Length: 143
Image: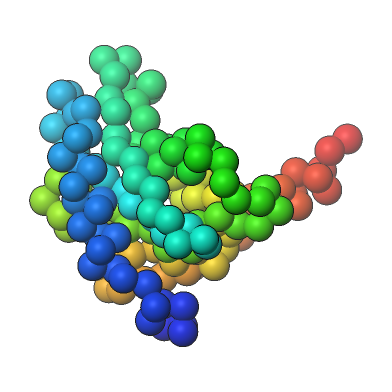
């Protein structure tokens, strides 16, 4: 699915930034280095890489680092989605799809229209995370 917004995103630059940061990943256990780079609504690029831990459950995905960096910068309004496009790659530079946990994390940082770079081209996050649980669900179900 291509939109005008897709046409204006420099996917090669995002993928290159993700590949560069993958080289800085801390992955001594799996040896799978992962990098993520995203474009914000105000034109900034934020990056993150995976950080493993001997207690495997504490491992942080690259997307976690990216969203953390986004919030640490704190330059955009809380009212609007911040990310407009994201590229996640392995250490070899080839695209990886975010895991389910990270798709949920990216939903709050970019919304369902966030474009995710895939091997087949950009796709809206809503296609990769159908029927997502979001803040509206949380609000509606509070007791």
